[in-house]
Length: 330
Ligand code: CP
Image (cartoon, rainbow, N blue to C red):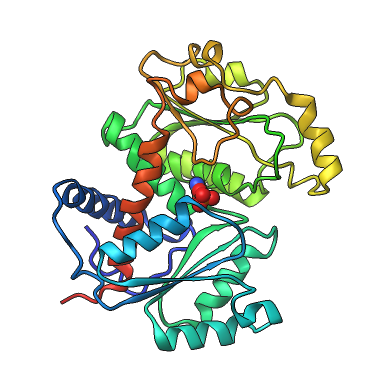
């Protein structure tokens, strides 16, 4: 277990070694056990402050980080561009240096394509406290770490030979970023799973994330494939992660997105499709879900669904990440 993570940023899982990621998962499991048994651990980040800067909305991320800081004995501030001088154009440098004079960590959600992750690295360049991504245009590392924690709870730590599928689905609402599928294809091969990415033409990932997924798969000796058929993807799967994302590599224009998305209304995870997976397969989704579009209620609320475990594990993994990076060793 790595003990030297104090001060380290967590902007993408790509910046952490497998051993460092394992350390976070081990600590998250310990903190979860303590949570289950009602054991307080509010000395771990006592009197420490986390700044949570949201450029977009959130239910899980905001509340799991905020509750997590309370449980660890600290406090989290909820910030938006409008509630700060960021909305008036204050630079990342000035924001980072000033917040670092007051507190102990800065967490940011900024999914603006081509901007979000760059903004976080700019903050991290100037802040002498850790910067966390709470989702950006490239990765959603807290989500994918909660996902691998959930998968290990269901299948154990030896995941070799398991088929992990991340499939695009139809959804009529807003344009969702690429960060979750990109984060998943980059992370899951490192934990020894064969990964299948499924989507219709036009819904591709950013090229550098595909390169990372291929490289990790080769290093781990596992498969990484891309298919354009949802049935083919789900067949024989152990884990079916089915969610919508926008055709961001092609367009973010609302009318064009709608026209592209509307061509694939049949990409919905229903009971027939879920039955193509292995009997013991689990259904995953990071939430929020567009019920009846991305998946049917029968799947979402069915016995194979682990979506609420995933959502809960956001709390435990983020607490672990904060303790590892924000608590100086005694
Ligand atoms: N999964 C997730 O990040 O949820 P929120 O958008 O509600 O934070």
